[in-house]
Length: 440
Image 1 (tube, one colour):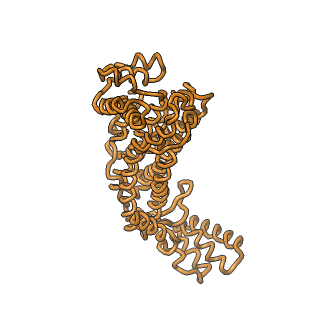
Image 2 (image 1 turned 90 degrees about the horizontal axis):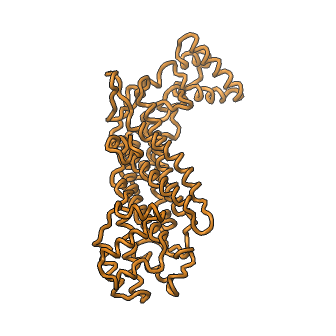
Image 3 (image 1 turned 120 degrees about the vertical axis):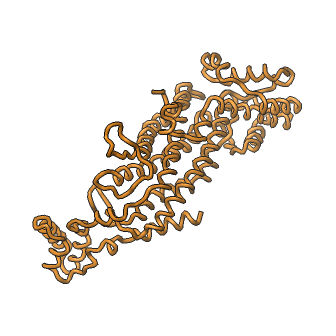
């Protein structure tokens, strides 16, 4: 198989990354770097740092010239960064040495690479935001519709107490809504321009270094950190961590959907399932499985990225290279998980009859409610012991817990054994989530 599932024609539909995938290509990276070089020259021309005519010419050329990634591969391999080869190729293509000599004036490779990265990360966040809103709309519609539909809650994969399908959806949707609401602050705190020269001191940028950085940020629609962040990778970590958390949130949804859609439970259908090569009866939960796998991958990559944030001195090739290898995979994992989640959230359907039947059996799911009902007339420890005794009797005799309990304790209300009366605040939480999404 391919080294990365995101670059594989064979696995492209299993791990789709959509438009985000196009942001993390060599061509997209080069295009972004040329935009930075052009904007820098234009700003410096306006400030008189370089001739204004040269700044305008470089900016214009940056929008027109393309550089083949393969053409600068040898230079990149030799220098460890692509910018020297890119600048050389750009100057050659300009065919105007009187102007092109001012390209990359006072900047360092990291300034160009990091700023170009932030341009692409900004687009990736916008795409993720759009997907999250779509998912939230689908989830909130179901949460509102099925706020009162009871189903078994499960802990350690065993029946716990009744909840509602709407409330379960809300438990997936609320953290996703929280992540969405964090985006504005994340953009301000992390989408930074980088311009501080070879060692972070701006020594070659001249007396207008700060103003150049501020104006470059404005020209590119990024934020001015008002300092060097060459070795401070927290802006990158914040964005990657946000994306990783979104993937983890979706992973939890996927994990539950695998269980709920599997044979033996069958309380949810997914709309789309996979087939076995030899077993015709199987309908495999492929999409939620892919989401969980992506979440697992992100967990390991996130650790590597945090290790890569530990830089030595003013620039660290090892740490920087490690970031290049891990960050795109984290962002593409998030994009792929969102792609699957959009389809799942729009097509998953509760199987009402199966949910209702799952609440039946001997009615042991109401054991907690029974213990609290008994605690109204006896000490709580005694009520718990009595409930355990009654559950054992129900299992032994094959009678409903309600029948066994009411035979001994006729004052117990029938509502104790009705799922619709024992969901607590589940319906309220479902409707609160739906209202919060509607208020976006």
